[in-house]
Length: 164
Image 1 (cartoon, rainbow, N blue to C red):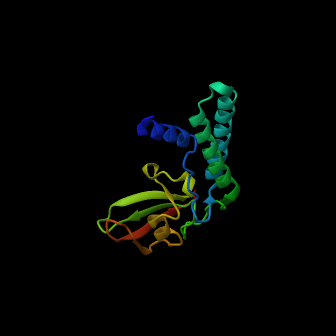
Image 2 (image 1 turned 135 degrees about the horizontal axis):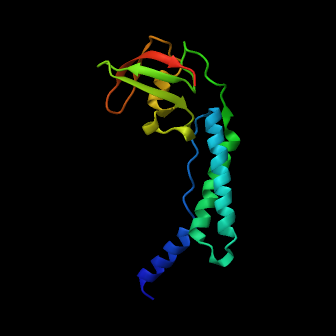
Image 3 (image 1 turned 180 degrees about the vertical axis):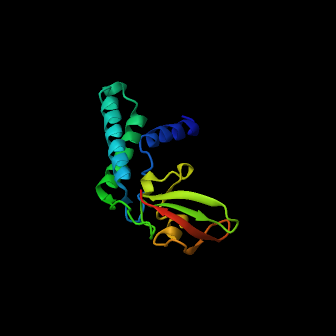
């Protein structure tokens, strides 16, 4: 047997063992919406897993293994979730706060600080543990904070804080 065939057999066996998703070391703070999203994700994965398992021998083994891995990850995230009280302060940035800040060129940007699993930068949902989230967390109206960025640090000013 050619050596190439042996490697293909090994690759096929490894395909059933997906790489585990890494769980963040930071506390798993979530907003109420973030908790609902996690619960929905677990329910969706459980349904997909049940559907795939019901196919018995016809089930896509790789898909089943991927679903099991994702279920382990999201169940862990759901169990470790620490729901934060709704941000109500307009004086101090908290997880859940919607914050408008201005950079050195007076360009304004509005973001909301959320938990890691809820983060979506394109939608303005920023992980509280990200460099921008850490810069803003705890800041008060009018504060200038240093945003430590790979592209170079930037001084930003908090100009509005809204509850979520």
